[in-house]
Amino acid sequence: MARWQPDAPGRLAAAALELFEERGYENTTVIEIAERAGLTKSTFFRHFPDKREVLFGSGALTGVLAEGIASAPPAAGPFDAVADALDALGRTFFAADRREFSGRRQAVLNANPELREREALKRIDLTASMIEALNRRGVPSLTARVAAQLGTLAWEIAFEQWIDPNNSEGFGPLVRQALAEVRAAGAGAS
Image 1: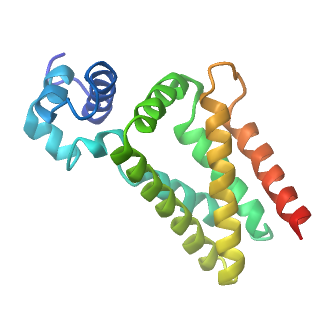
Image 2 (image 1 turned 90 degrees about the vertical axis):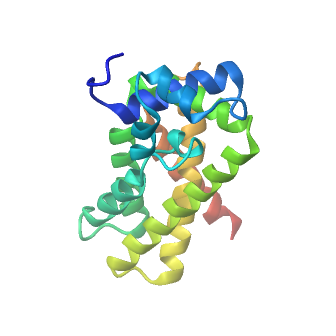
């Protein structure tokens, strides 16, 4: 690929995923990723601080979640605001054309403890983002924490279902169903 082509971060992520699948995460270098993408090492480092981050991108997920909660109707309760945010996340990041890449990415993450650790930290950030956005809506702290943590759990469940090659349903319906199931399980636990 020529260096002038657009979407350097996307090209780097695709190249990294291919190399991680072929050679393993530990056996792949930043230089190899950049070369596979048709870019330079310095271009890689303009977009990502290290090779681990190439599969995690920027903090865009947290921004979408916070904006989704902020833009929920004023009368929406905490769980409905979280559901709106998860819907926005699905529309932005989990379109059907991303399903295969996301499944492949998850397989690479599952095979590498360092990447699983980074994924866990990302989930903590997502939950914190939802808590802060709910607090800004005036939701009490404990309620915000519970709603955000249940939202994160619903996101995880829906994501696992969404990347399943046998699944054809969109992320939005899956996350709404998972959120309803998580809420029902919580109500039944009392």
